[in-house]
Length: 180
Image (spheres, rainbow, N blue to C red):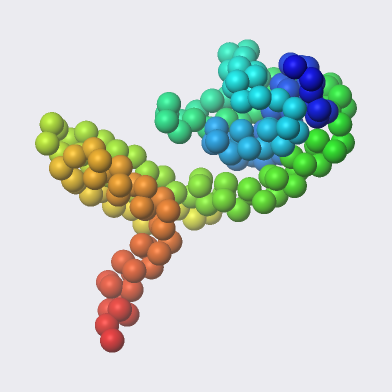
C-alpha cells in the first residue's frame, strides 16, 4: 500500500499519538483522539487502534473510563519517550494536530465538566446520574430513577448534550424567573 502522507512507520504513528496527547492535560475521548491522529491521511483506523493499544499496554498512554467511553492521556513514561522522538514528526503534521486540538479544546473542556452514569437499582429500575461542574466543583446534580436502560441512556445523553440549558431552566423555575 502506497502512503501519501508524512506518517509512514509504526514508530511515527505512535509518536503522533503521543504528540497529540501531550498537547493538553485533559484526557481525550477515543473518538476525538482518532480525529486528531488521522489528520495526516496516510494511516488507517486499524493501524491507529493497534498502535494506541500497544501504547496503553506498554504504559506510554493511560486509558481510563468505561469500555463505551474510553479516555486517553499521556503517561510520564510517554512524555519521556516523546521528547526523544518528536523531531521525527514533520512540522506540518504537528501543526495540523495543534490546529485540530485548538478547535477541539472548548468541546474537550466542556466534556470534562459534565459527568453522567447509569446505575442499575433493581430489575425494574435504573438511575440516571447527571452532574455539571465548573472550575471549582459541582454546580448541579441529580439522580433520576426510570424504568429501563433505554430511558436512562436517553436521560444521560440529553443531559450531556444540553447540561447548561437544563441547569438554567431548573434554576429559573426554582427562582420563579420562568413565570410570565
